[in-house]
Image (cartoon, rainbow, N blue to C red; front, side):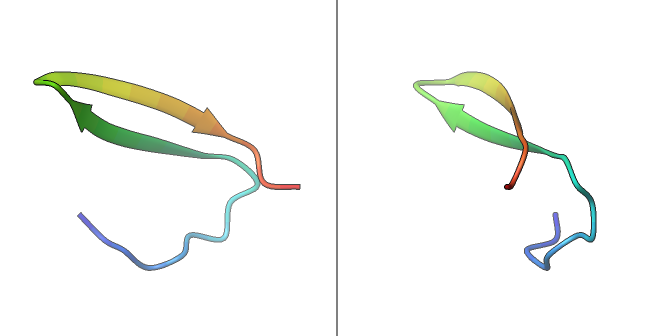
Length: 29
C-alpha cells in the first residue's frame, strides 16, 4: 500500500471496519 497522493480525479479508498472491507469511491472537488 502507498500513502502517497495519486494524481487521479477519482480514487478508491479501502478501509477495514469490524472485519469487513468497505470500498469507497471518492471524487475530490
